[in-house]
Image (cartoon, rainbow, N blue to C red; front, side, top):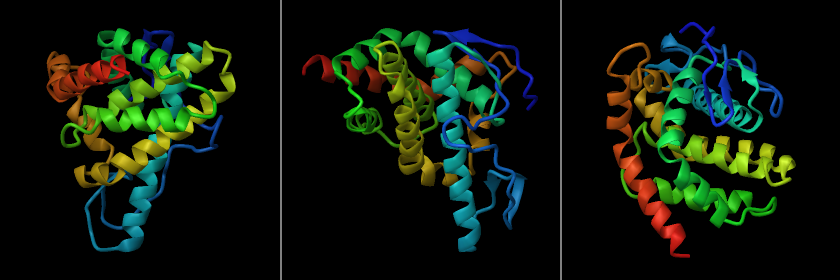
Length: 228
């Protein structure tokens, strides 16, 4: 994928970023592993424990890169370049979810009464609820990133700018812990790009086939939070 993508804005999110290191110092992974095919992040599963460990590390690293990319874009409105080849796909899907469910995300973040001390607890509680009603699928992942972005945006607009880096860390770790093994089983992050391809008329249909149950889950989440 060509990383020179035209900026695309949603809720102050301008998409165009090549490097990543502000909070964690991570950079796009260029490691190799025995049994690798297509890219460093899509490899044939084998019995090599060292290789499997490398793959898990790469998957987690990419997830953290994407957490900063999404949150930086949504909180600063800066022109950001892609940290890796998956960022454009995530941006498109996060944008779609944010546009369609903006009121839900905003209402949830306000009702959570987030403070610097309870970010991890509140984020994990709600994110777990968002993925609890069905099996994991690719549609869950941009939804979790969108939720993290809205939490960070709420912090940034509530004089809690120092908490934004905490949201990045919590979001990246949540994706690694809850989705890492599943992403590995699907073939790595390359399968995410394949699930939501760019540049064809069926992209929106493809996205919403994958996100249908996510939308249902967001509706249930909004009802749960409203009942508190």
